[in-house]
Length: 338
Image (tube, rainbow, N blue to C red):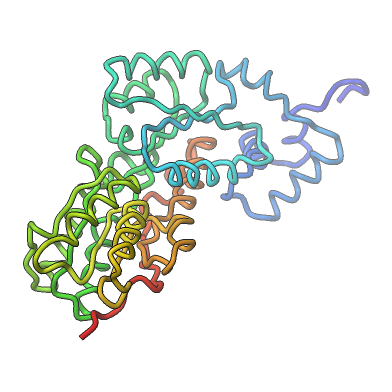
């Protein structure tokens, strides 16, 4: 290496006795390297003063080191959780995050996203539900040479392009747990139509009721928008029936919080007279009173895995694709009062 020449990635690879690909993985904080290799490469980088040149690499790849997060989702806490997970993964790498909200009902949806990808020269994109369920959109991203990972509540794609949760099974288990506590009249607040997550959670509710040998009463079913206000409306309806439910499963925490607010407004004891379970385990669930029993949707873990798949596509298949949800038991659900 000439005295005045800047060290290159080739110099690092040669001195460390590894491939350029391995050096790139060290730079991008890939979790797949053993610590000995990582330490050896990092020591060479520090010794020769190598500084990655993202502009030069971006020019060679005809892509910027930008990850696009594209969403049309009413759940702000969910979107924030995904952002935090991605940012944790790309911290201290060459990559940066660009967030793009869209309108999934717009007739220009595909054209708008195509323009966004081409204008920003994105390295990869993460699609959040419900637009992640759009196969045409995912295919367009690939044709543009942009790596894509889709988040969902069910398997939507090949493992290297997917992070998904087991919503249906998680909801079924939570509903069956309510039956084991002694609840027989269990109501349900569904999510908005057109969301795969809403459909999977609705199927899980039916599975849990069938497993418990309990009938589904249409009078105890309501549909919301994943927003707090729709939980309030569901409370007005479900708590006004002649024989109200003793427990409610809500398809997300925001609606559960709205329902809880309305139940307390009506003077009901929670959980004595009505038990409530949500879904997501957002900050809201722990901060309201009583604290909300909820199904933990592993949003950050899914986002971290998605980010790894995006910044190191060659190792995407080695990252997990299916993430299991757990029931977080707090004070809003218990056995019904006598």
